Length: 206
Ligand SMILES: NC(=O)c1ccc[n+]([C@@H]2O[C@H](COP(=O)([O-])OP(=O)(O)OC[C@H]3O[C@@H](n4cnc5c(N)ncnc54)[C@H](OP(=O)(O)O)[C@@H]3O)[C@@H](O)[C@H]2O)c1
Image (tube, rainbow, N blue to C red):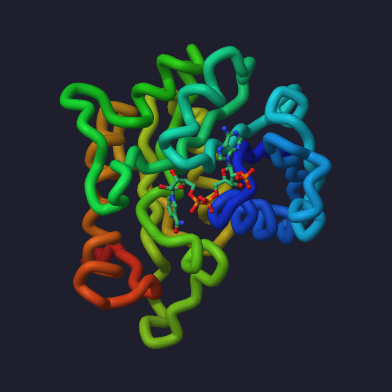
């Protein structure tokens, strides 16, 4: 699958390296493709417009403050769009105030896409790099995926499964706010309450 990742920071570069490792073709959409720091990336580098052209999947992995300006005018076509962002306030400890819409729903509006999904926002980049929990060998870290387009959601569930997550359908795109609040809980537990970024949520079944 050809995967465009807009934003090559901690989340973007980690997902790109992992997906390249399982055989996908990854191209990063960045502001300055010639910048030397991109040489360490696994995959190719282009402008966001070049990267997303013809991509099966477009992953948004930008700081929230950059998302709207990066997406307005970007043609994502029929690509499956994955919103991995969290609409964090400047203090990174609370969500920005969008009383009615989640970040993912705002992204659906900015891209004009009905194939937006919310995923990869509820755990840390370190857990995306290494999903193994040897102390809980029968559990995989949870990766909830929300979205309105069933086929798009199945693509994203498959991509998360390939990385070792337990990917589950978390409902329609309107459930994305719940995923963003779950991310805030993870941030609070990891950083404010001192459990560290190696913690991950898991789903137990009986
Ligand atoms: N870090 C985590 O553990 C984690 C986990 C889940 C979700 N998230 C969410 O994922 C998103 C990305 O987080 P991150 O930690 O990966 O951020 P990061 O390490 O700060 O990387 C952000 C990337 O975005 C790029 N960027 C900034 N403004 C841009 C623009 N206008 N156009 C194109 N690229 C731009 C930066 O490029 P330059 O190098 O050019 O500055 C950088 O490569 C955030 O919304 C965050 O809340 C983060």
